[in-house]
Length: 392
Ligand SMILES: Cc1ncc(COP(=O)(O)O)c(C=O)c1O
Image (cartoon, rainbow, N blue to C red):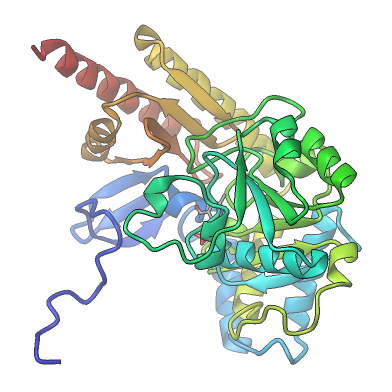
C-alpha cells in the first residue's frame, strides 16, 4: 500500500475526548492523574470497580498457572466455573457454551435455537439490542444500527416490547426462537409491565418455540438479583450472559437447557478463546463476590440513587427509571449536552435510546458518590433547561 496509514484504530466509536491510563475502585484516572467518577463501567462490565483485590488475586494466580487451553482438553477451573454458574442460576441440568463477548453469546444462542428447531426465523422486540455481529444484528432493532450497511442476513419479525400477545401474533411456522431482554438497556432503560417475562415464557411454551433471554446487561446482579429472569421465576430455554461475568476479562456464556442441548451437534459453535482458564477464574471470583450481601447493596443503593435523581430533577418532571444499579433519566433533546456537562464535572455516564442518560455504576459504589452524581445531573439538567429558556 502506497498510502501512509494515518490512524492505527479504525474509526468506529464516538470520541469522548479523554484518555485514561488507570482505574482504581470507582475512579478512572487520566494520564495527569485527574480522577473521573466511573458510573458507566465500560457499559456495565467492571461491576466490581477497577482493581478489586479478589479479581486481581484470581487473575494473577490463574495467569501464573495457565492462561489458555483449547476446549478439546479438560480443565478443572473451566469446569468449576460452569458448575458454579449453573448452580447459581438454578439451571443444574443445563449446559454452558463459553464465548468471548455478549454478541457471540447471542450468535451461539440463535444458532443453537435454529439447529434444534430446524427453522431459521426469529421474533424480537422493537427497541431491543443484542449486539453487532452479523447474526446478533438480525435480532437487534433500529435502523441506526444498520445505517450504511447492506442487509446481509435477516429473518426477524418485530413485536412491541412488553407485549406478549404481539409476540404470540408474530410467531410463525418458521420461528425458531423469541429473543427478549428483561429490561431494555441500549433501548433506553425500558422496564416492561409486570408479568411480561412470565407471559412471554408461557407463549413460547404453548407455541413450542425456544425462549432466549438476553441478560447480558441485566445479568450478574445489575438489577439487584443475580438474573432478572430468575427473580421473575422463569427458566429460559437459552440464557445469555456477558459483560461483568468475569469482572472485566472478556467472556460470554450461552446457557442451554437440556432439551435444546441434546439437539445441538458437536462443533455447532466453537472458539479458540472460549472458556479460557483466565476468564473462568474471573467468573469464579465474580460468583464469589456477587453474593446476597452485595445484591442487597445493589438494590438499596440503586433505590436511593433513583430517589436522589427524582429529587434533583423534580422541577423538570423528568422520568427516572430502572432497577437496581441499571438506571436511566429521560432528559429529552438536550441529552448529549447533559452528558458533556457531566463529563466536565468528572462524572462519566452514557447515552441510551434517543433521550436517556444511563448510569451503570459499579456495585461497590457508595451513597456519597451516587449523591454527588445526582447533584451533578441536577445541575446539568438545570443548565440545559436555562439554555433552552434563553433561546429565541
Ligand atoms: C442486552 C445486550 N445484549 C448484547 C450485547 C452485546 O454485547 P457485546 O458488546 O459484548 O458484544 C449488549 C451490549 O451492550 C447488550 O446490552
